[in-house]
Length: 87
Picture 1: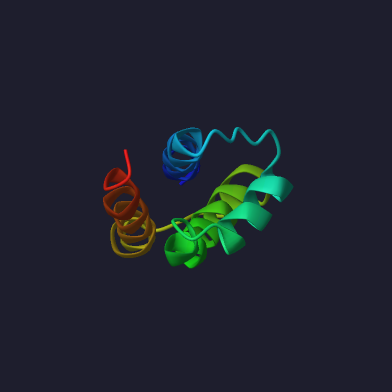
Picture 2 (picture 1 turned 90 degrees about the horizontal axis):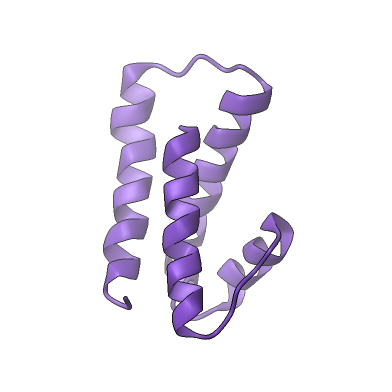
């Protein structure tokens, strides 16, 4: 889960680089994700991955294989597919 979140974050950062932005904090990135036209479409999926990553790192939540396959991977693929169009 953590890897999927950070991979998604790097796609977001790659998109932001095309707009000459580089964000150094999760809080600022969250704000931009909710307002930037090219990112708003994947805001929910990004927030879901962020939530999964947080729970994996700090809450030691034990995700099932289905959690990864049917939730996190789906969210990541949505983000990747949408943002690759801009890169």
